[in-house]
Each structure stands twice: as structure tokens, then as C-alpha cells.
Image (cartoon, rainbow, N blue to C red; front, side, top):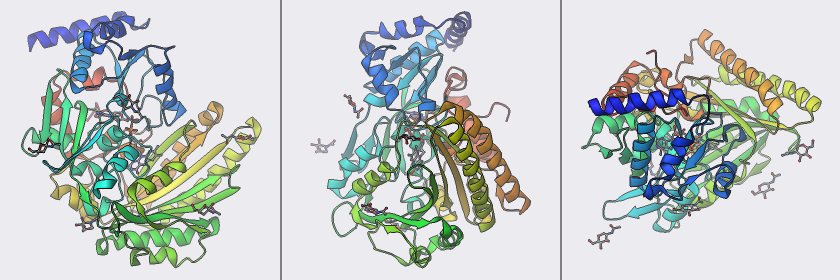
Length: 509
Ligand SMILES: Cc1cc2nc3c(=O)[nH]c(=O)nc-3n(C[C@H](O)[C@H](O)[C@H](O)COP(=O)(O)OP(=O)(O)OC[C@H]3O[C@@H](n4cnc5c(N)ncnc54)[C@H](O)[C@@H]3O)c2cc1C
Ligand SMILES: *[C@@H]1O[C@H](CO)[C@@H](O)[C@H](O)[C@H]1NC(C)=O
Ligand SMILES: *[C@@H]1O[C@H](CO)[C@@H](O)[C@H](O)[C@H]1NC(C)=O
Ligand SMILES: *[C@@H]1O[C@H](CO)[C@@H](O)[C@H](O)[C@H]1NC(C)=O
Ligand SMILES: *[C@@H]1O[C@H](CO)[C@@H](O)[C@H](O)[C@H]1NC(C)=O
Ligand SMILES: *[C@@H]1O[C@H](CO)[C@@H](O)[C@H](O)[C@H]1NC(C)=O
């Protein structure tokens, strides 16, 4: 213990002394560890440049002093020990789909990049699917489809495993299986002292619970062992789903259909939906309503979607029975990489008024961004998405051992809606002007919902902007669990101090 504290002190002093100039020592020391030779990449190398290009959002693709790409859990342990011993600030990256600066990389420090730990394996002996954090969901589904099984993971294939699972995870199976993280039977995780531990219902159960939604606050996860879901569709690995496209005139019909769907989830937990209002001035000439619908039993047009089909004016309908692989690939195609993206979120009760109000405000934002981008001859798109966070999800979370997502407290408050606004542009100047506008829009929608008595404090970490203190919105009970686990498993607060990317446990609560 004394030795530990000394190491940290020496580390912090070393960091402070070198804070003005980059710390080549941090990178060189890593590079000098035999096992890590050839796994530390510096600016100018092809791998470094290649990894920068695989960030979903250009705004997040900060250039660190160096990147380290471990290939084994033992590598991760050596990395953590070295970073701590030298007091080196670091960021954590898996699929690289978080959008804002400092969400998954750092400028002053080292990015620990899980890109080379990307395997998925189905183990019939344990009946678990082992997934490494650097995998993408597309690879996971491609591996599992031939076995006729899947897991509750991301809906868009290009998204990464590590971030989605550590922050919660909304899947096609949300209503029937809870958050994606609720389906993790065991974590293999490297703690701040470099030790490799397992966390599950028997071993370190407090850590297991806190990792479910606790992001990178407790350790670096090196393997997720997930419960499989058997797909029962007509042919192997299939579900039913796709997209319905509507014109902008259908806005209020779509909102009403979503309200109705959300209140009836308990009758059909195998169906899921998200409704997006997508504005692409240069590409599609305006706003369209994009409704993604799925039924995981493979049933075509189940009654849960009658409200959407009843609108009657769909411009397109890509629904079909297909593999999870094919459907998650289709969803990736609508998500181009390489823009400067901003995600910002809110939540409220299942009530049409805040959704309608937000739609008006998003229309106004689009008009303002049109003017700005015309002046700067740049491009932008916005996507305003609403989706259910139902009582059913929370019930499944509780039944599966609990988490720190912080939704338990709304269980007697009815179903909820998760709001997400995405602004994408190819221009840093537009981004600078758009960010405060989007922030003001969200505050406005939240104030309106509050005024109506349908507001909620909770913000989904995986959709939150860097300016939103997501973990401060999970409520006292969840925060207490998270803080207790942090005090026990990271007593020197390494993941609060040396980790300089991602969301942290609020310091002042
Ligand atoms: C196109 C698109 C579609 C999306 N679809 C969905 C969806 O269907 N459902 C949903 O819930 N979310 C969705 N999201 C949000 C998504 O969950 C987050 O962006 C998530 O962070 C992506 O995971 P990643 O591995 O790519 O994250 P990264 O950006 O690589 O990492 C984000 C953070 O996660 C933590 N982290 C990553 N790896 C580890 C690890 N090994 N150990 C500990 N902590 C770690 C770190 O704090 C890191 O900073 C989507 C995002 C995009 C851009
Ligand atoms: C997956 O990891 C291996 C090394 O384990 C690496 O060679 C490969 O490029 C990675 N795949 C992707 C898509 O990054
Ligand atoms: C499953 O068990 C069998 C028999 O003990 C063994 O041969 C096989 O390697 C195991 N498979 C895995 C993936 O561990
Ligand atoms: C369908 O929903 C039921 C009830 O929630 C659940 O038990 C089952 O696992 C689900 N099946 C699939 C394939 O999603
Ligand atoms: C409708 O969807 C099909 C299948 O994805 C696609 O080929 C076609 O281009 C779409 N049409 C419109 C008008 O979007
Ligand atoms: C941005 O708009 C210009 C026209 O103003 C167009 O040529 C270009 O392809 C657009 N870029 C993207 C990425 O959409």
C-alpha cells in the first residue's frame, strides 16, 4: 500500500514536471517493455495514421503522443502498470464511435487502443460468447450467425463493442433482455494496480454491477462474456426488420405512433423501434422520417407496428426477414464516417409534447445551419432521434442482477423516451457555431418537459455530449454503488485522474 502510494506520488510529480512539454518518456518506457515492442505507434507511422482514420467522428480523432495497441490481456496489465508508475495520462479507445473531443482519445497523453483485440468466440461448453473490446458488432454477428445465435449488442454494425457495452447498450432486444450490459455474465478486467480479475455474479459481484454502465471508471475491460440469444426465425440467424421512410409531413403521425408503440411494449417485447428525423439538405433535399423497426422472432409486420403502417404514406419500406448481419450492415450504410459529429441527449416521460416541441426547434436549427453553411460553403446534416426506454427494460435489468444505469428510480413513473440530436458537418467553423445552438436546444426542450411535469434528469452516457455530466444523472443509488466500487477497486483514483478521456464519476457528488 505504502509502495503503491509512493509510486503514484512519484508519477504525479513526473507528470507535473513535464506537463509543459510532451512526455516522450511515457511512450519510450512503454516501447522498451519487451512484450510491448512493436505495439507502440508514434505520429508518422502508418498504423498511427490508419487508426486516426478509423474514428467515426473527426472531432474525436485527437492525436496523442503515441498509441499503444495491446494484443493480450497481459499486455494491458503491463500497460496499466507502466502508465501508473510514470504518471502518464491516457485515453481509452475501442471502436472509436464516441463523437466529441476527449471522448476516446487524448492529445496530451497516450491512447490505449483495443483495435487489435477484436476476436469473437462462441463457446458451447460454457454457453457464453466471448468478445474482445476492439471488435465491431458487424464482426460479432458475422461470427454468430452460422450458429443461429446472437447477443444483445449494437444495432449499427460499424459501432464498437467496448464503448457500447461499458456505457449500457441499446439493442434490438432491449425490451426482452434489458440493456446490452445486463447480458454480460462475466467481465475480464484489468484494474488500476495491473491485476487481472473476473467480475460476475459470484466473483466480485459489486464490480460486476458497477461495470454495467460504469464506463471506464473501474478498469480496462479485456473480455466480455455474454449470454447468447437463440434466434428462432424461419432460417438460421434471422430476424425481421428494416426501415420505413416517410416525408416530413408525417412528423406528428410518427410521434403519435411512437407514443402508442412505447405504451404497448409489454404486449410484444420482441419488437423494437427508433424514429429519426433526418435532415440532409444537399443529399435528399430536406427532412425525412426514418423509422427502424425490428422483430427478433422474425415475424413480419407484427401488430406492434400497426401505428406506423397505419400512417400509410411510406416512401419506402426495406423490411424483410434477414440475418442480423445483413440488417446491421444496412444500418451502417446510413452512417458515413469522417464528419465532425456531435451527439447530445435528454430524456422525458412518454409524452408527445416534448417530442413535438423538439421537432419545431430542430426545424429552426436546420434553417439556421442552412444559412451558416451557405455563407461558409460547407455541408451539414442533423438527425433527431427518439426511442423508447420502457419499464420493461428496467425490469429485465433488475432481474439480471442490476446495473448503474440509474433507471430503477423511474420504474413507477411509467415509460420514457430517449432523445438524441446528432449534428454532423465537414467544417470546423460550422461545428463551433452549431455546438452552442444544439446545447441551447436541448436545454430548452428539457425546460419545456420540466414545465409540463414530464422531465427527467437522466442522460444516456453513450449519447451524451462532453458538456453533459452523464454519470451525475444516474441518481443517488447508482452513484453510491459506482463510488463504492471505485473506492474499493481503484483506491488511488487512477481512472479519475490519469485517465483523461471519457466520462468520469462526478467529483462533487
Ligand atoms: C453510428 C452510431 C450508431 C450507434 N448505435 C448505437 C446503438 O444502437 N445502441 C447504443 O446503445 N449506442 C449506439 N451508439 C452509441 C455508442 O454506444 C457509443 O458511441 C459507444 O461509445 C461506441 O463504442 P466504441 O467501442 O466504438 O467506443 P469508443 O469511442 O472507442 O470508446 C468510448 C468510451 O468507452 C469506454 N471504453 C471503451 N473500451 C473500453 C474498455 N475496453 N474498457 C473500459 N472502457 C472502455 C471508454 O471510456 C471510451 O472512452 C451509436 C453510435 C454511433 C456513432
Ligand atoms: C484485428 O486484430 C488483428 C490482430 O489481432 C489485426 O491484425 C487486425 O487488423 C484487426 N482487425 C481490424 C479490422 O482492425
Ligand atoms: C469444449 O469441451 C471439449 C471437450 O472437453 C473440448 O475438446 C473443447 O476444446 C472445448 N471447447 C472450447 C471452445 O473450450
Ligand atoms: C422474445 O421475448 C420474450 C419475452 O420477453 C423473451 O423471453 C425471448 O427471449 C425473446 N426472444 C427473442 C428471440 O428475442
Ligand atoms: C428503397 O429501398 C431500396 C432497398 O434498400 C433501395 O434500393 C431504394 O433505392 C430505396 N428507394 C428510395 C426512394 O429511397
Ligand atoms: C459538400 O457540398 C459540396 C457542394 O456544396 C459537394 O460538392 C460535396 O460533395 C459535399 N460533401 C459531402 C461530404 O457531402
